[in-house]
Length: 208
Image (cartoon, rainbow, N blue to C red; front, side, top):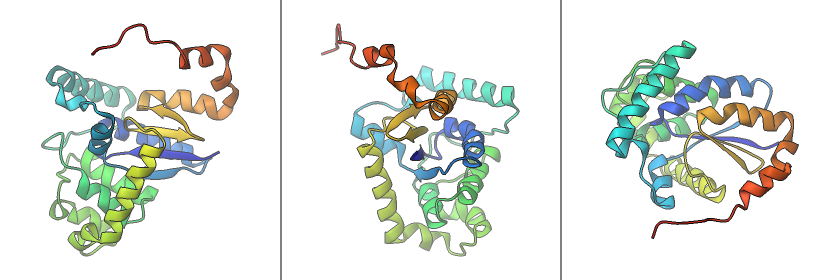
């Protein structure tokens, strides 16, 4: 099976799912694909969860509760949302592997550090063997790869992060991880009659 994990470092839900993705990587090959969530929002024409004030407050409280329930360290960075481009590009420059992804996630959500510039990410870059973070982030090849990741996400019909794409089936959100695991164990669950019925359910009303 082809398994791709689409994520953006700006998402606390991606941080919550990351330990389970690492666990999945012990038994399956998982492609880690950092993408710009804001670009996805623009393409599909919807607001981000942090752009709705009441939703933003609820999500932050919910994320903190979920992290404490599972014993996962979580500390919000000084400002959120923040511009994640530098962190996404650094991840690509470092190979988009588990080590780079872990280091950047830990910096942002484990320690609550600033991650919106090459200067802010310099300690993480050094940890990953990159001496000049600014040059790495500005590399045209790195920028091109991030764009290619975005186009792959759009081709896969990604509408949010984090998302596990398994053979084209989308499992959106950290809370859908168990659903994804169930599909991996038994892909036939996707083809049950009721699953097909709801996928083609007629729309009874729509907003103009």
